[in-house]
Amino acid sequence: MSSVRSAYTDSLCFYSGHTPLELAETYGTPLYVYNEGVLRERCRDLMKLSGHPGYGVNYSVKANANPAILKIIRDEGLVVDAMSPGELHLDTIAGFPPEKILYISNNNSAEELRNAVKRALLVSVDSLSQLAAFGRLNAGGRVMVRFNPGIGAGHHAKVVTAGKETKFGVTPDRLDEVFALLDKYQLTLAGINQHIGSLFMTPDGYLDAAAVLLDLAERLPAGALNKLEIMDFGGGFGIPYRKYDGEGRLNLVELGARLHALITGWSAKTGYAGRFLVEPGRYIAAECGILLGRVYAVKNNGDKRYVGTDLGFNTLVRPAMYDSFHDVEIYRADSGKTGQETMPQTIVGNICESGDILAKNRLLPIMREGDVLGLLDAGAYGFVMASNYNQRCLPAEVLIRSDGTAQPIRRRETLDDLTRCLL
Ligand code: LLP
Image (tube, rainbow, N blue to C red):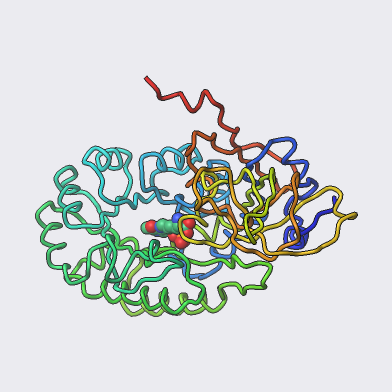
């Protein structure tokens, strides 16, 4: 195949024996395409972070919950979280047994908590009122508590989940109240967890926050540390979205060495023999996924060049929601005959809002009708955040297996799906 801009996927053989044009033709667009090899590599990157016997990776399913993806993640030896009955359902379909699922959610109804307890899951609560609610329905049980370590991180204010401005977690100054409730309901504190936010590219904040959680564990009342089974430091591991600008990767060798030293030293000092978990979503799933769409119109409005596609923010909301940057590839069958002339272009979707922008003012080869576009790094927080806005059907998903087969893993929605719940 010839194409206009595909050096990144070419270098990885991302589409294996297929071409994006053929996939777009066969399955239609918008289409999420995943590569099994890339997914497995990312799982292995994180499983290698530490050789400590208690170390493990808890994949945060909110990033991508397709069971075909989850089965590969299970096969790589990771465990998973669930933050809703829906995620729990999909984890179960993917074959995770209850002891490999942590229920890490917030603001649950009693019914939802009861469902998690009935399914024998370890539940993390993130407020005193949820701890009391949990105690009322499962007195004598095991529970985890999510703390706010006071250090936040993230690519946007909307995804910073610790520090001063957040709804999440219990602040460590409420430890006495936590233990009063644990006592009241005879609960065992089986784990403590945190999540500082989504997307850091340097290890310092994450490691500082991990040290805060370890300090907190040492300050627990006598005997409590012996009963702890899990210390979960949360996710947030970033990926380089600016592939064509040569953005560097998060230094996992450094992060791993420092994390390993931290947990090894701490368990030697305290005698803690439980698990240490990291809880990444994006790092595992983002780079194995590309969103394909097609250009249907090009125009100039004033001095701006707009490229109109079927990739509205109903298919990938991150640029509209967080001003996120996704690199763009351009695929065209007859690119040999066309030049690489560039101009600033704004790629938009087919949704009736001015904010329906996928890529703003990008200096890219001139795109034209019929081109297929690939939005890179769309595997995390892509399909899971897609919507039916403007009554558009949800996209299909295809997985390129390691043997090169293209396996459809979700059919495109139909108009009947849109009306399924109407009474
Ligand atoms: N653990 C908890 C409790 C979380 O809330 C999250 C993400 C994670 C782990 C995984 O974080 P990650 O490793 O993926 O950064 N929709 C946003 C990201 C929201 C993240 C929400 N919580 C985005 O598209 O950037």
